[in-house]
Length: 341
Picture 1 (cartoon, rainbow, N blue to C red):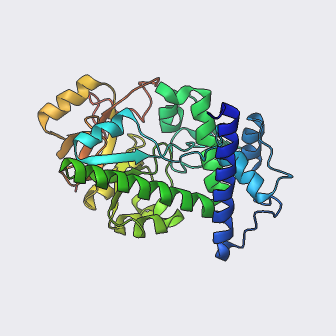
Picture 2 (cartoon, rainbow, N blue to C red):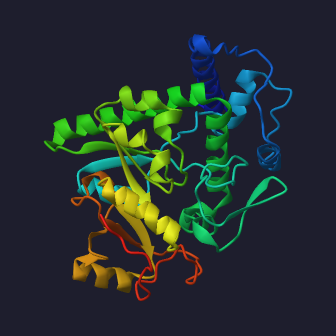
Picture 3 (cartoon, rainbow, N blue to C red):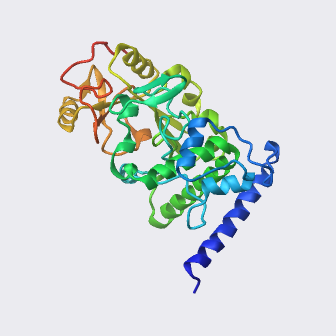
């Protein structure tokens, strides 16, 4: 029987071989595994990596990739995972894997450009704790708060930003593997569960522009995300047949409510974070809010199966948050802007 050290060495050898093969296979990018690391690294990102003991300068391309992607076990880090909420979606007929990248500027790269709660001082973007969606982000609750989770988010994001060519190949392999698993289970159990992929678990990246090949190469997979971008910034994403978007209301101020109305007029549902579960239940019992249908967004994460078009997807606030923050909607204080669609 192999020792733990022997298993790690075996895994590492296999992983290095895989990564080297991917690098040599991406001929159009002209990446040599042996070339020195030469990717542009923002100072904030450099500092984040240094704080985790990772220094890429002086390494080869292959060595840098290994530093970002390999786990302590020697295996390649998975980009996709699951959560309690996405597991609920399976009961609705959508087996979802989700990617939790580093939100806002946690990694040193801005991955949520339309988030609230961000400020820029001397060219450096920072997050104000407890303010807006950035300051009340999902990473402040549950398993997300642990250093191991934070490290994984940052390293996955760094790999995507620095070596998108490789990250795309690895993501595509994971997506296809998940789809094969769902397909086999359907055949075995006589079910008709669809394969779901949510790439923006904690980020707001337009993947239809970043990795368009993922959608065309996996036509039988249902991709979906929430976004806080105005509709003008997601026009292309809305045209991708297997990509479903839900707009996430950033704030109750008129500018963002108008953005919500723009999406509703285009037939896109809008998610809103409500102060507490009691208010959500009351709104669900009423059957509508501001003359639009309502959906219980906490029942599952199967947004592509939402029945209504141009409806509100209600989510109650969780974790630590400021109840007076405009990101949190207090249903007892009606929005000052009328939604018309």
